Length: 138
Image (cartoon, rainbow, N blue to C red):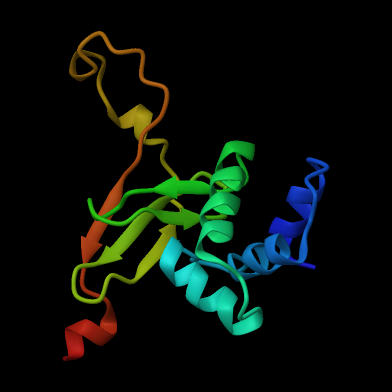
């Protein structure tokens, strides 16, 4: 059973076969799929699953706080099941590969008080960009 399925069950969320396939699609390290990528992968396991079911299920998972909805490239929302560990993202500008990165320092500690401009900063998100090894070779 996937970690996400286990977490969703703690909410007493009705685990239909379609929801289970979607949750299992999101299982694994460095998962940052778009809804269409999730639909494509889910269809391999359950060809009759609908686009509406995928979108509705993702919205419910986000509302439960078990999946993060990210907009890393300004175009497509991506869904990240890694909610248990604070992390940032490393994105390849060539192919779009996205990896979670865990830094030792709290980014809020690196923002001096005079740079906060009176904001009560609650969270910070850092995106590192570059080229992955495959794109650097080509």
